[in-house]
Length: 269
Image (cartoon, rainbow, N blue to C red; front, top):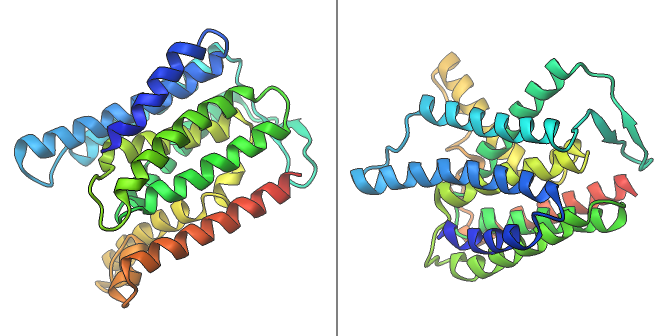
C-alpha cells in the first residue's frame, strides 16, 4: 500500500529535478528510507513472520540514508546552519561547527523517520497526520521566497497520500507498512531541514514526538521498575486499551496535529 505514495514522487522527480536540485535531495531522503522499509516489509512477507530487518540492521541503514541526504545537501546545496527564527521570520546563521551540526541533522532524520513509523499503527492515523504536516510545509513555502520546490514536491506527495488514505481509513483495505511510513518520516524531516525550520517538528509534528516518547518512557520505566507507565505503547494503543474506538483515536490525533500546524504557522508569521 505504501508504494502508492511513490508514484507521484517518481513522476515529479523526472519532471522537475533539473530545475530544482532540492527536489533531488528530497527524493534521496524519500526513496532511501522507503527502500529500507520495503526491504523490511519484503523480509516479513517472505519469512511469513513479524520479524524483518534486525534492529541493528535497520538502525545502520537509516543512519546511512540520513548521512546520504545530509552529505548531498551539504555538498550540492551548500546546506549551512541557517535557521528561520520563530515569531520574527528572520533567517539567522547559527554558529555551530559542521562536525556538530551535520551529525545532529542525521539524528533528526533518524528520530523523525522512526517516530512517523511508530505512528502507523491505526487505520488512517499516519497518513492523515502526514497530510496535515505536508500541507503546513506547503503553506510556509508559499509565504517564503525560494521554496517553490517544496510546494511542487508536497503537492505531488499529498496527492498520493490522499489517494492512499481513501483506502486506508477504517476499515482499511490497504496498509502503509514500513515502506510508506519510513519514507514519509525521512522526507518530512528533510523538508524541515531544507526549509530551515527543523524546530517546527516539535509543534507541527507533536504526535510523532509523543508516539516516540511514549515508547522511550515505557521501555526505560519498565527496565527500571518492572512496571508500565502506559497500558501499551506507542501511545495510540494506550488510548485504544482505555476504551477509545479506533476512529476516535484517529480524529483526536488529527485535530491535535492540525492545531500544532496552525500554531507553528502563527509562530513563523
